[in-house]
Length: 193
Image 1: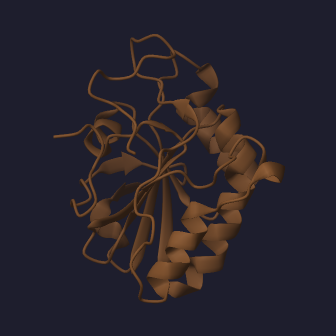
Image 2: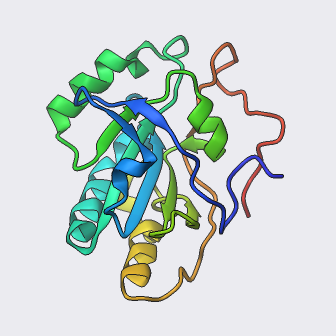
């Protein structure tokens, strides 16, 4: 089995605290026709560089039953600004249109096979994976974006078509695993395409 979820696999459950003071499970999003789960953080320049593009995509598709859930699994021992208090402060300042959950044990990141920040997963109403990979082709510099894979995928899905490109490689910083060097990747983690 590969490190990262494969197309068609079921979304792993989770029970994680969010910056709004609530705890959420996968079942809490049962009303969503499409669920975008993405691994993100506070410090990564690829996240910061593309957050506004992700915001516009989330806002564009909200009325069509698409929900976004961001998960931060980064170890605060690698980057202190990735801790939960900084997550709360970031959401208060930015008011992103998604929930921001904290995966302190990194168990959810491992279950999904998160490779980078950001790394997007799109699930259908049955919570089967239909897209995984990058949001855009230039997340660090939005001015250089030529391809918005996430937006194209969601447009296809809400129109009743399958994702034309279901797998891409995420572009960004690697997940900061607890007790590991900042650039360490699990031995079974690899490019998706």
